[in-house]
Length: 166
Image 1 (cartoon, rainbow, N blue to C red):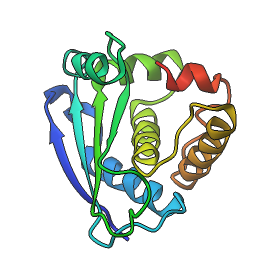
Image 2: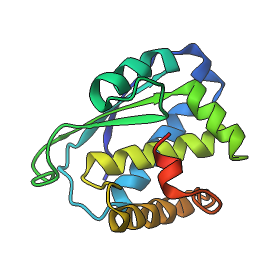
Image 3: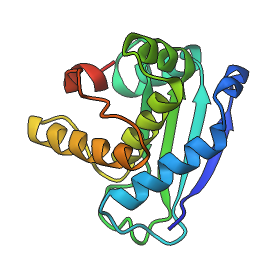
Image 4: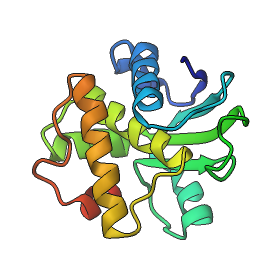
C-alpha cells in the first residue's frame, strides 16, 4: 500500500537533506506497512517541513509547551475505522530541532528525520507513549520499522521519555 503524501516544505534549508522526497516516501511507506493497522486504500497524510519559529506556536497552542519541538502529530480521527477514513492527519517537523538533536545524538539528519516521520505516523494511527507499556511497545515498533530501513535503533543509548519529549 502506498500512502498519498501532501508535502509542504516551508524552509528552504530542508533542501540540504539528500533525496528528501524519497526519504519521506520510504519512512511513510515503512511505517504504514509496519504499523499493523489496516488503512483505507486511499489513505493520505500531510507533512509540513518547517523551522523552529513555525513549530513553536503550534507546540504552544496544541500541547501547552511554549518552545520548539522536533515533530508534532495531528491525527484526523480516532484510530477506530482507519480502514474507512482516508485522511490520517498532519505532521509538522522543525529543521533546527532535527539538526540539533541529530548532532547531540551522533546521528545523521536523514536518519533522525526518518525516525521522526515514523514516530509521527504511528501517532496518527493511534500509537502513543503516555504510559510506560505504551512507550515500550511504540519504541519496539519504531525500532523494528527503522531496522527495515537500515537505520540503527534510535533508542539504543537514549531514555525513551527524554527522546520523545523534546
